[in-house]
Image 1 (spheres, rainbow over the protein chains, first blue to last red):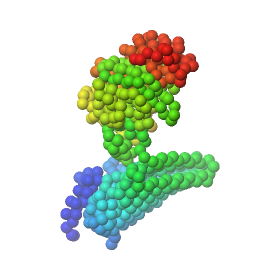
Image 2: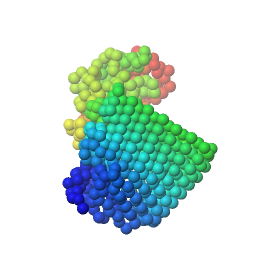
Image 3: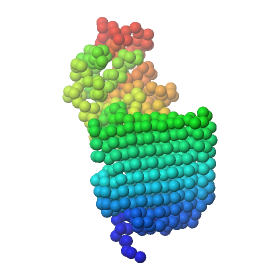
Image 4: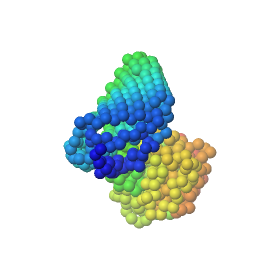
Amino acid sequence: MADYSQEFAAIAKAYEASGGDPTSLFSDRFAGLVVSHNRILHQNSIPGVRIEGKETPTGAQARITVEPGTVVAFPVHLCFGVLPKEGLQEIISEFEIGEGAKVNFLAHCSFPNAVKVKHVMDAKIHVGRRAEMSYSETHYHGEEGGVEVLPVAKVVVEEGGIFKNQFKLIQGAAGDVRLDYEVDLKKNAVGELDARIYGKKQDKILVKESLFLNGERARGLAKSRIVASDHCTSEVVGEAVGNAPGARGHVDCVEIIKGKDARASAIPKLLVVDDRAKLTHEAAIGSVDKKQIETLMARGLTEDEAVDVVVKGMLR
Amino acid sequence: MLRLTDIKLVKDGKQILHDLNLQVREAEIRSILGVNGTGKSTLAYVVMGLSGYEPTAGRILLQGEDITKLPISERAKRGITLAWQEPARFEGLTVAEYLEVGRRHSSHASLSPSECLEKVGLQPAKYLRRAVDGTLSGGERRRIELASVLAMSPRVAILDEPDSGIDALSIENIVDVIRTLSRNGTAVLLITHHEEVAEAADRASSLCGGTILKTGEPASIARFFRNHCQECPHVNEPLEQETNHG
């Protein structure tokens, strides 16, 4: 087998820079998968959690299975990265979370040197009856802004299941982000989508979060917090479809504009098919609230420092 | 410590404050009593220097320095701060971080965030890690606002109705905090229409139609307020002959 020790060290460093703990990344106690460009550097299954990764010419395929009833004590660690300036990484993944299982995923994606990198995440997720899955994805980009990020997920949450997702890209330049998550919620299922992105320079951000409330009393939240500064453009599409009695959906979008050349838009798409469903939305786009700024200035911060505190809090 | 001379504020063509003279000494608690619409909060915003509240005429002096043209943060660095009646909410900012903001920029902050919370009757273990967001009730948020003023240990604290929405049993708690500020040398400009709170002051002034109408002992001003102001027809038209520059 080839010696990937240098790449191993470099990806661990990038992982740490994105907020992860490298000791847990390569520990046998934790289930995990580490993919650098199109090479699998590490994969580890633990009782109840099976990680099956396979290298492809442009990235990797991964099938992750959590056995029914398994309560996974520690987060499953996933790390994807491209260290060179250029490259394509396509991660095609399938998640099967068995009935009654509970699992948290911590995913870190690192592209510290990217000038022309394309990162595709294509996930199919099935959350079984009364199962709970949370997936937290944090990106670490360099300052060049040369990353195309295309995270796409189709999620099905069976009766009584819970799916929570958080996508966070606040370090470095976002690049060209086109996020598209879609959740199909069955009876009594709960789905939460949460995207937080800080766009700078020429970044282009498109966030589409869709909730299909297909089961009775299904509940969903599509939340987004975007900061668009410099020449960044941002568009958020928050979609909710109420197809069943008692279904409840809420779309919550806040976009902050910093600078006169940034642009932001929000498009809520709410469709009630069953008249016993209820959907709501709220959107706020504009500069940082004046009262927040003046409150912090009255504690001694300058205006720029105050904006920074508000923005960091919102994206946390 | 703080002196306002001949302050006038015209906003959107309407005169909100005029001929307003006021002086608050070091460690003094000065309450301002007035019914809604008489300019109490406007007075607070003018002293803090909020945008849109720059005086049309007059001067604001802090320890002899003219601060009339200074921006908010410069006034704060010199020791002036404001507790809003309806404080802002901050998504993602914890109570501990919020209290630290003021502490960091104060040269003589002495109380820790935990001590400040205890002073306003909130358990640190329960609140320090909570976000200063919409999950807090109005009363909790106002107490945290007061705690953040304590944390800063300012030279001048402007408290805009800190008793608003606070239950009667907790009023004494709020009064204790105000006295703590004063004991530490802070000049407190206390805006209220709660007589019990106003009487905790060393001196009180009644505000009517944008100017100080009467200044004196808190009990007598409270009595005057009760007998004359609560049903006053002169909200925007003060009785000029009674004007008593404080």
